[in-house]
Length: 168
Image (cartoon, rainbow, N blue to C red; front, side, top):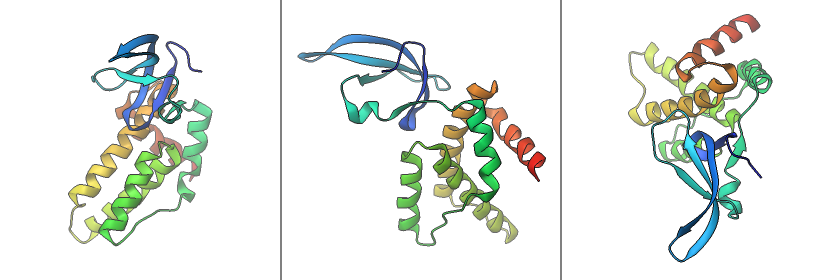
């Protein structure tokens, strides 16, 4: 059970604060809901029924600073997941994004950055679809890392680069 004011990651919605746990009536049924407010997006509230295991399973506590630093330390050894076939690549990238696991987001980011670098060497840009996947993976990862690191999401990439430079 989560509690009010707890910061959680909720699937593709990213980092949210549990604003309230309340009984709400939608239609004829009255259920208890977690009411989530996205931290880094100015979007509406998210209502998650407390008794809906499938939806509650998409909620998890955000990582600690120590867990984040460990993930960053492991980044150089992360295997990439490039697929030449566009349909296979879309399926793979969708699964990585949906998993809500930071390791999967790192795989996706590393894969797309390496592919972007290869394309730039031959004077080409990253395909728009791949650029969209990269931005979304970065948003989800950087939003989760920002709070425990005491940073804004836009500062996370610099933090990661500094940590990686210290490893090399």
